[in-house]
Amino acid sequence: MYSPLALAFIGDAVYEQLVRERLILKANTSANALHVMAVERVCAEYQAAAVHELIDRGLLSEQENDVYKRGRNANGINPPKHSSVAQYRSATGLEALFGFLKLTGRDERVEELFGYIWDFGEKKENKD
Image: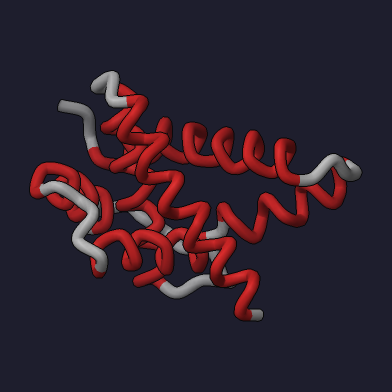
């Protein structure tokens, strides 16, 4: 079994690639505009809200929830100044989950969960 932070390391890349792919398909715009839109979806605050939406809706299996919690509770997490410790830990847990799913060959589940997260963001944007 990989450490939670190793899972988060790969999960961060998986998650960011999915965001970038969706943005390209959604908006054919400048690289700078795409970057700004990506940052909104990959920041700890957004990821924390998204993972709590998944949990609140009961969309994670028991195993997935356990992996998320291992990532969230990992030692050695240093949050950036713009997010709270709780937000950063939740985001790390989400990234660990995505890393776990990727490394265990569950690409369809990655896509499914990311679809919920993307829809969450679309609804959030429409409210603002």
